[in-house]
Picture 1: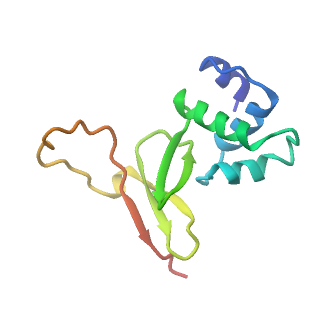
Picture 2 (picture 1 turned 120 degrees about the vertical axis):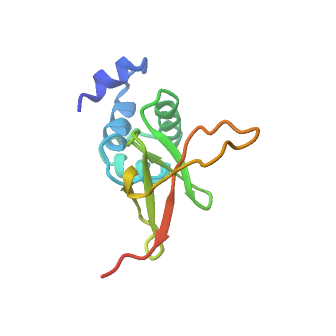
Length: 130
């Protein structure tokens, strides 16, 4: 993935710290929190601060490169998959994984009065079988 080119294309000035954060968060299969991104990227970018991670993540969301999700309580995570899909949360580990969109039939039977639906995301919770 050409992270520098992608950042430029979205009007983001690619500093070394932004590149390191984007390279990780845009290619991961996990759904990391800002603190998890910080812990993962800091070894390769020692000058990285928590504030830079938070600011970069929010900039990537603003520019349409990431989704910000609150799936479990007040824990905010970031998802690089922008196409429609759902999520599974493992009760034992808290791990979040993707579920294909067509795994569930999502149908709006009637309009919701006074509501413009922006997004639908089914969150399935349970335990993985051994």
